[in-house]
Amino acid sequence: MGEVKPASGEERLERVVVPEMEAILGRRFPVLDQGFIRVVDYMGSDASIVQAARVSYGKGTKQVHQDRGLIRYLMRHRHTTPFEMCEIKLHVRVPMDCWRQWIRHRTANINEYSTRYSIAIDAAQATAPDQWRLQARSNRQGSAGLLDADTGARLSQREAQLQRLAREVYEERLEAGVAREQARKDLPLSTYTEAYWKIDLHNLLHFLELRMHPTAQWEIRQYAEVICHQILKRWCPLAYEAFLDYRLNALWLSRIDQAVIREIARGDRESATRVAREAGLLPEDFQPGVTVLKRNRERMELEEKLRQLGLPVPWEPGA
Ligand SMILES: Cc1cc2nc3c(=O)[nH]c(=O)nc-3n(C[C@H](O)[C@H](O)[C@H](O)COP(=O)(O)OP(=O)(O)OC[C@H]3O[C@@H](n4cnc5c(N)ncnc54)[C@H](O)[C@@H]3O)c2cc1C
Image (cartoon, rainbow, N blue to C red):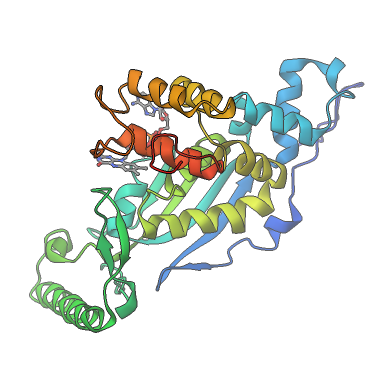
């Protein structure tokens, strides 16, 4: 093939290389007991976000905006398409129950290890005796606190027996000639699977925001934390910083939240309580110090936000 020469005045582009990412390509970041995440490939960097955004703003603004300021602006204002210019391909090993949550993110490109084609990976996630979590009372989907060590030790022992038996039965079926697609049906959800997972940065941030949230399951949070703090931080440090500031650690205030906070700031707790009552967060006949409050998710979330801001909860006794 002949050499392709740039036309006169044509911008010469260099392929984006992030040395911090080159250094970790293929390296396994361990997660849980036998899981891992490794970067297979990546495209783009902070510079690619800025480059794409500047196309939409025209060259005139090039000198005005600093890269960091522009990325922070884009993140704050949810101008999302420039973030889609970056992509990452990961190789992950994840227990199947966790993968079941992961796979719900439809905006990724995925190719998973086939247990129809190949023998299931001989690894199952084991829970340490001191890591059995108790069912949360306040959140039906969550956990809170840990089981006592003695009970935990017994459960871990039973888990090991169960996983061993399930694997033995699986291998017995294979030896008897049963098709892999059927032999696998009683393998536990703790069995590890592997996949290649490719996603653009915009959708990755959405994944991270949901899966790093304290209400997300602990196991998937471990993977999201590694992707965020070990990989994204190296890949796009400015986008990472803006994501932490404006998405992950930002506090979302509804119209009602703001009205309550405004009254607290004015020093009028009675009025703040009235606003909450009128918005249906407190019962109509609410009387401070007398009414026993029932569970109200919206009110409890507002109370949590007030605590985070170091503000009193105006309807609580002694506030
Ligand atoms: C804490 C938590 C608890 C959950 N509990 C449950 C549960 O009990 N049961 C359950 O089934 N799921 C549950 N989920 C899964 C959840 O409902 C979502 O399916 C999952 O988080 C993926 O989010 P997403 O659709 O925004 O992401 P993606 O699939 O990655 O999509 C990203 C965005 O693209 C857009 N998009 C993608 N596909 C479409 C489409 N077809 N139509 C319109 N817009 C689209 C949407 O804006 C979407 O937000 C839970 C998730 C979390 C984080």
